[in-house]
Length: 338
Image 1 (spheres, rainbow, N blue to C red):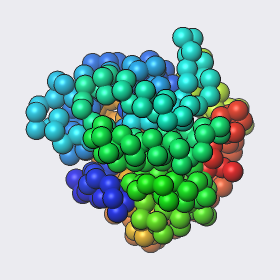
Image 2: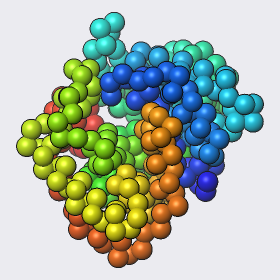
Image 3: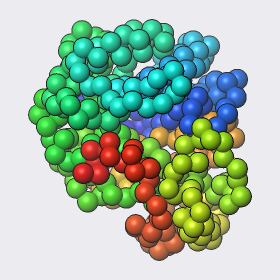
């Protein structure tokens, strides 16, 4: 597994990271035993970056990741780097109640995350969405204090726009920006990627398969549980879904011509964007099973020539997807979209 440094100040991490959210929340039921086994398999394959959030199933995901680390061989456990998001407020029914980026809250969230994960420090810590009532300088400043005390190693950002990136970077060193980036979500290319490149900030890209939409495995007639995020996502609704899956079929033809799966083509495309944009981009793979993990890891062996990239982008042109990437209420929380 190749490795990259997360920005000029961040840690050295694997070329792919493992996004663990789906093992606990938002994509339907998951098997805890298989989830832990998938984390172990990822570590065995050389994946070092594990991404979670304290609000994923209200702490469940952090405890699951903590269990996986606790039961992994010592050598594998020591190689793991934890990226943690905080700030999203939930209630006992699982409803969302905004974001809290106050300095006192930042430190409170961190204290609980350290306990649930069973570690003495968090490698990269970031607020999931900007708190509109708290200047980003105050939130980042609080994380910087945690860095000074050794509870956190590096500071990250999540779903913020170019102006906020600059303000945060002027406050403290930023290792990476976590943001959605895929064949069907390319808005970061206009202002955000040039800004991160200028400031020496890496990108950890989530949603590289658009929550399974462009994985090649999502069926048109699939029934989604009410608590599955995709049941409410505009891209998975009615005519939008039909249109988007037609794009997947176009991508499938290109992938088959290359001898790879749809998912591998989509992941390899994101991997290729780092060199194209002269920056470090680390895709986060949301695999919940060892089978899906193995498929995703296969993307690291795929070489896309310029002709391949052209064919992929003709199959799935920029802005071709139908529907926003989040429901309207959640889009309002994305500083990156403003």
